[in-house]
Length: 369
Image 1 (cartoon, rainbow, N blue to C red):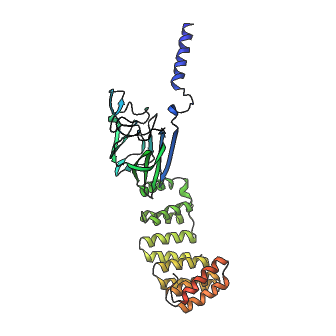
Image 2: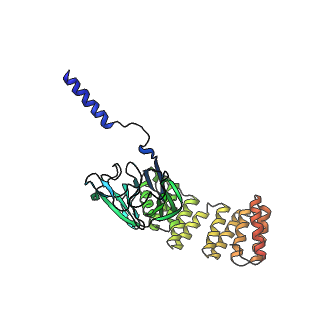
Image 3: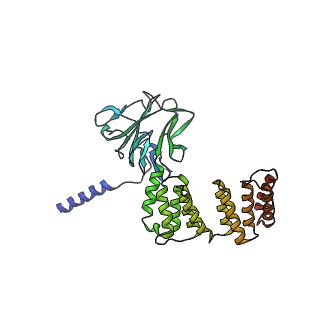
């Protein structure tokens, strides 16, 4: 009987240690999560939201709710040496999916406790590997991974419940701000988007995705758009044609030619496009010719437009291309001639409206390209 009682007590103790009741947050401070991505890097903040509760003017500074500096009581030392928990209840945490820079300083991917040593003119942000404590009462400096100083900003309108917000978002960085009462604490997070994306693409192209030519093209085209990693993008472009599952289509050949163009290997680009044009539609001829015009290769563009005419005859796509080709060469008389042909063959009202504007421009002696 004694053994059974001891076993029951042990089970009860074990259950107590693992059980958690689903209750509202302590102190009426609602829990919140905010997350956004910079590039493909997720940034997530979890925190609890205290309210001002008629304490405006009594939130910040010595003797108020949040005192300045490292001034929260520490239960380890029993002295006021801890920063503010930057929220309420449990640690405020911030998670970075990949390595980032905070105010220009590097920080590895991971989840961190976010603390703030507040000041009227300066705030010290503390990123701690200790992310699962209650508040900052057991804060220990030895767990600090990064500290940065930022300037607080005064808000015109009071924020009742503390919040975190992504207040600026650009291609390769964001600005996050903690806002409560009339104080905002912004900090900049930079992400090495291109290298992170490239690492992910390489990983994905060694998986089953690497047997899908359209996905390989997407990877190459990302590099073309960003003008990065062009040698590898060329290899990906070849793989979309010749690799396992590859396909020789106008699109894959045009993509390979683009890779050569980006690397200024023009003869190889032209040779590839000669092959692509053998299977091109009239509209694809026209699209390629217009790309050549943007490259200031007007004579080559005219060769393409005339080849399209010989193959497809008097149709809208052909005449539309010839209009652009003659306009690029300054032959506005012939440009108008083919524009009017295209007008008569226009497939819809939108195309007619566009052509009307182009014809008007050509009659003024202005290039439409």
